Length: 322
Picture 1 (cartoon, rainbow, N blue to C red):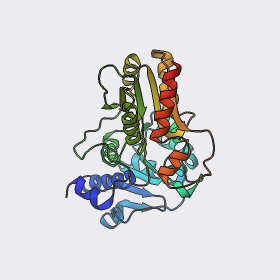
Picture 2 (picture 1 turned 120 degrees about the horizontal axis):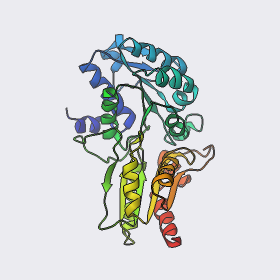
Picture 3 (picture 1 turned 90 degrees about the vertical axis):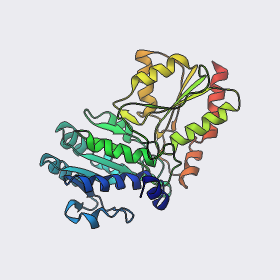
Picture 4 (picture 1 turned 180 degrees about the vertical axis):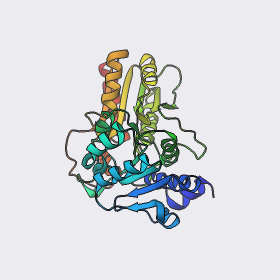
């Protein structure tokens, strides 16, 4: 069965395909373990296939990370699977000291990032994780654009010697890539070039957001605007060259993310531009609020100003002011 066939059966969710990648890696390498925080996924029977390499530790996220770090010190390659909000916030100290400071070869797969938790509400939504994880030295931070990229990013995380945080979503998201896509840590991908010199460069990250960035580019194209779209799938190390190259040719740089307005992709791009190539910047992110107004994920994005139409209107307004 090809990846495309598997996805057609099980859905285009980054959390599902990351788990499938973990299972496929475990079939090839006996050092791969799954450390669970009271989750698991019936569609990906890691525990049934490898019960001795499947540890269900319950709702104890600090223990999850610390146990995984101990396993890594013994030569294992553990994947910690749990809600991003609980991994990054409850186990922040363990990620900082046991994983990053100690250089443990641990991979943390955080689910329900951004607003993708929907009706689970602000307790399960994770809008602070990029800010926190980017501030931890020696921790690689990856935010895939779709299910295909999530699979490839999980494989890349396994191949990287050191701690990695994978920022994954919950439900199905529109595909950006195909099963033949090749993923490289730290290298942004140009998805749309526009014709001639672009008017706007949209730098986006994350499931749902990158597909919507492409949709927004199409909407702006209806007004004769040329738009370059970059998928910034790796938040750390950041592809600063791609950011500066985009700023050199575009009238306006736009960042687009499902994360708090503070400390995420927009802040990283702003810092890069400030020190390397000052340029007009417009940021689309979740306002600095607790998102208590809940709904299905697409509606959540619209309610908090992150729809493709919001980007279209905001960009047009910003260009008029330049």
